[in-house]
Amino acid sequence: MRNTLLILAGVIGAALSSSAQALELKVLTAGAFRSSVITLGPEYEKASGNKLIIDNDTVGALVKRVEAGETFDVIFLTPEAVDLLAAKGKIAPFSGCGQKVMFN
Image (cartoon, rainbow, N blue to C red; front, side, top):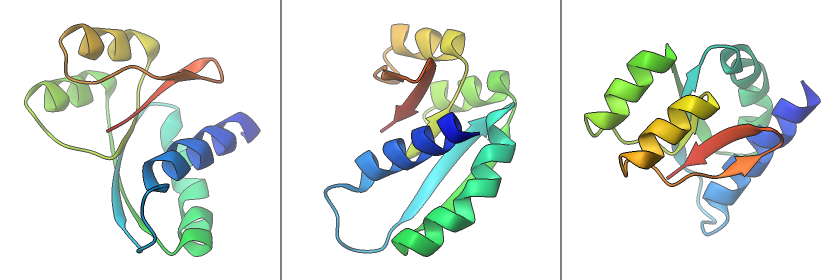
């Protein structure tokens, strides 16, 4: 749980580092990440003033959605899905804490 908190805080913090205004961030999650993002999301929103729009789906469905051009701010996927989407030029890989986490 602590690693997920650090990942969530770090990834979202990086996505927001260039903005001082409150934002709405679209977060796509798959599988085991869902419960952590939903649990930690309200804490992040309270601390940052930003709003998270959390959308959970299966890894396969998220891959299809990204391949079809869906946009997002942060996505949590399996390493295999990240590698697949990166190979197709749909996302740029970033690796941290033993899990691959993406943000646009």
